[in-house]
Image 1 (cartoon, rainbow, N blue to C red):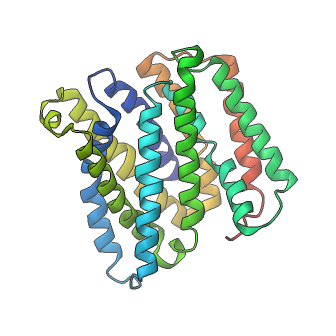
Image 2: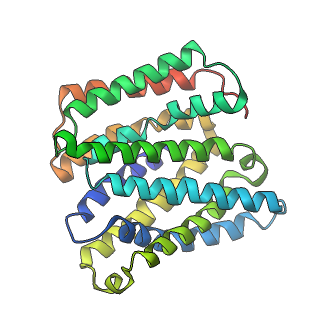
Length: 288
């Protein structure tokens, strides 16, 4: 379950790049993704909440805040960044979020950053540097906006993970994830409304609707449920390690469907990132 979920998540970048071959904006594509995914999360939230604990005002505030940050904010920044950089580079930049979590958690708990964490971060970002040198189909300064946007997306997702640690054990991962999607859908649709693109929604090319549906179902809903099921059976630490399949799968899928080149330097960078995340995951994670 965890492995299939990681591979399905990795299809997101490729699907977005394929959709960008047509006249569609990042916010429109994100809106299609959210609209397709929302009904499934509504059903999951209802089913998971039947015997769950009562939602407090504080819970509702956290769900609203972290849903906006972790799903709307991170997703929009990611979609926007993919307009500038390749799918393989985007996924590897996103995969730096565990290293970012280390530093946010250390800051939030007031503890010093350990040598293991510093080594993990150094390996991770050395890997990103290797991939950045040879990654992407567009070169030079044109890649920097995409790099900044995707790293900002990774930071937003890391904030979401750290901030969600206290409420998830009480509500359950599936219920929390499903409920947090609702403000994300609201934020996306509000952004979409202000973009003035509602009139264009009914006139998009047919393949864009297909990619939007695939993003919502196969790159969002199914992997979320699969990874939750995997965590329930093997634990979060092992599931996170299996998640290292994601960057590798993205490299291969981008090579097959987008024609993106795979170089020896990219492979070395990918290995460094995965080793860095492995080193970080072996340490004891603090509770914040």
